[in-house]
Image 1 (tube, rainbow, N blue to C red):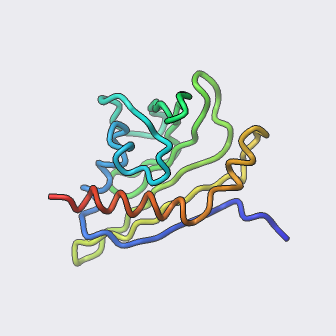
Image 2 (cartoon, rainbow, N blue to C red):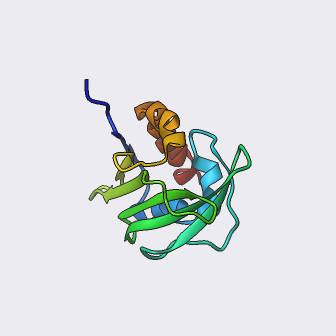
Length: 148
């Protein structure tokens, strides 16, 4: 049996792609919608604007992650590869794709891809990430995006 190394979840959110994108591209907002309660804090002022940007978060376990932006299209796509503080990315990737519909809703696809993961110490955690983890983040993102 082949191990699934790319996991996705999808949902429709009743909000514009621009509104949703701002919540994702501003790291200080991530603790509000992280469905796995893994992101503890990110300092304001790290708004992602392009491939090559790096934003830093402190995880709930106290570790610091530098997140390297590898894909970026304003209001449509953002993806990053996490790394231990000061190190090169370990090879796994988190991606958010947004497809705004004509009715003003947005189809959201959240992907975790660990096909290029090389850090053996992260393999067990990578194997534990499934669709429910991703769906939980989408649901919390939905709640934040649709809040008045």
